Length: 223
Ligand code: DER
Image (cartoon, rainbow, N blue to C red; front, side):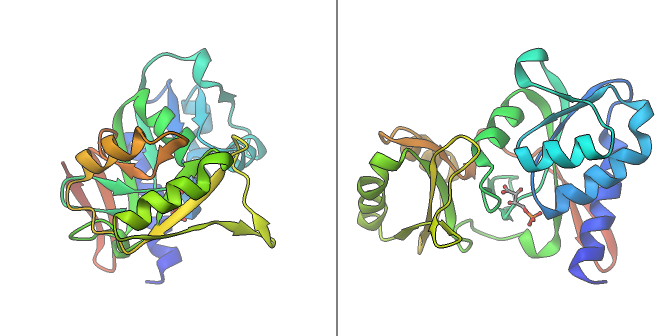
């Protein structure tokens, strides 16, 4: 099975967690895109979706799925999203798709976080994947120096030769060389640095279930 086929597998498997008649929280990325395509096959059985990015909103709307704003809904039963890394406790590194801020917001408004991922995302310790951090541009150099002081090396994510601008108009700093042994403490510390909008460690908003795509089929991890 190719990685793409594994993503399709878990995207379809996530349908079983969607509460019929309700609004489902939808994340961002290529695996989530497979889930959105699967969701479209049951769109008459749901009320709609809350989206975590412009990209997911556009895909949902193109498939005829109503999209609601976070402020139009209260608690969502389920949030379906991918991850760049997930460890044995459901802690994740996210933000490869630059949508981490809105992903964390929708996840915070959801009761159950169901992570869908191909098996390459399951790691022992978070930190091999470059850690995304959404930052107010004027703070970016100081935040990069703070990560360097922790032993990391940081850079401003580029797109088409200039700094990527997020859906929220901010920039993304990617940090390599960190060992995130205590995701809860790391998330709490970095989230307080002036200028940090969102750090791509999802520890408070960890996953409760992970549908892991493997050549042997979908493995369900619960945390
Ligand atoms: O940006 C994100 O957090 C995405 O969920 C990303 O981490 C997963 O994207 P992928 O499914 O394309 O690997």
